[in-house]
Length: 332
Image 1 (spheres, one colour):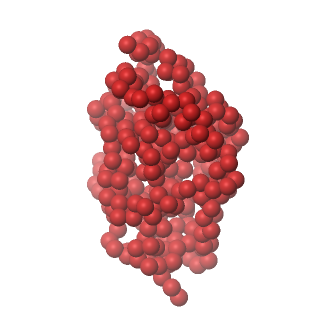
Image 2 (spheres, one colour; image 1 turned 90 degrees about the vertical axis):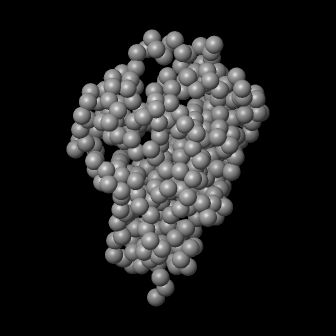
Image 3 (cartoon, rainbow, N blue to C red; image 1 turned 180 degrees about the vertical axis):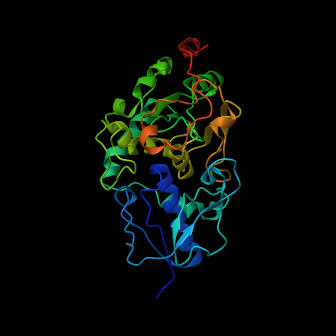
């Protein structure tokens, strides 16, 4: 019987960005170590045309390990496994290793994430329209949904507005696209003529075929569940300015066009440039270590009651002052 690596939890361990990374991990291991792989059905089979072997035999688990952390163990930086250690095991983890581990297989990994029909016919015209509007496609990712606690901080609107003031004037015919689950936030960028997926004719319709939101759909709008157009635009952008989120990271990581990837950092309270192929997938900075930063934490997310009730915040949240946002909205 040939050597095999599986991930029976693909599609349920984290959301879309995590799944992109996990699938790349399984395929990279199989390629490097000359073994077979098998996974359950997942959205990538519809979006990218993968005909993956199904899991037909149960393997012993191989759980991911992490560097020490004062918080829950999975919040530490993950430790890449030794060569071939996952063979004939079922991988359990997020596979968010320092991307230098993945770098030797960069072209192979990027090739896993080329959209195919029928979704291609839906999303490719979006890029064509955006390119007609200007020469430099800038995408902001304002992550909301289940963020606002632990190492998943919210990126304040003011940080994005400050980035615009510092960089917008130097860009060549820039076009600003905003990816977010909360379209109401777009109004804060009105002076920059922002574009959303609805503006280019892609109304939210719910999850794509074959995708099951791992935490249920009860708290999520159609626009969040229909995530792929936003991800695809980030993957085909020139500059991505984003929350510390695997959703935007995975898009920049698999991109062939992104020239600059800026990621929000809690400890410095601004964006820093990151090389997606030589860096950590996440800063993993915990909100308990940086209390009182306005707009980075929320105590009222309804998801906390069901899913994160055991992760209590040490300090209360500090909301953004609307006056601070208003003061930055208009360009200098």
